[in-house]
Length: 280
Image (cartoon, rainbow, N blue to C red):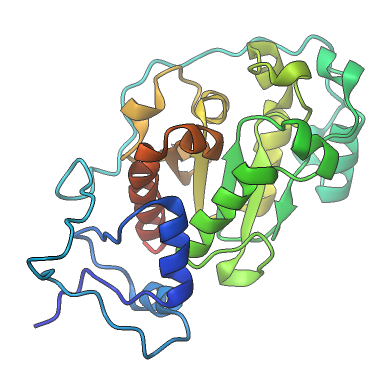
């Protein structure tokens, strides 16, 4: 009897996982048929992954736990972000997309505006089931005006494509991508608490407008802004948290994964957790 917890991968998905440096793995929790169909792709000739690998085959990379952890937020200590240096524009929490983006682009509420070439607001389907939130834009992001550019963006795109998603797609395969910080910190310095506090209302409004089924936090500053905690990623990943009532999964930023490729297997496990959570 075939193992219902495994699924068929087409050549594109195998290539994406190979690019991530991750061998195929799937959790014990069954995936909804609709998700299996989307993941399987259009290649019926692809050979299914066997439930039991031949003796000569290399072992798959295991996740830390045999089954998915409980879907409950940990008892992490909250972080109180300071108030912005200067007041935000009025009504950010009620703005629609155009006004919100224009207000963020002209924001003067922290010192990041002094050297801003352009703000990096977000990209993708504004009604997507997935929302990806990173830390802050870097030089390439500021130049292109899109979050997750360059090698970091390529890795993110490969990760998303491995689970059937794309920043250019609409509907069920779509994803909306943004950062906790909308302006590039000079010299790519780590975002400060006041900077995170300044941009938090913009991010909160983006989440309210998108109304995603799942939020994927990539990086410790995205984690600090959304979950209001300074707990490390390693302690919070592998669990499902909540923000505005939306399930949240924490994982590593692509920049970190490029420097630490051994943790790509953990990032794949986080993507699987996010996918199964989004499918309910």
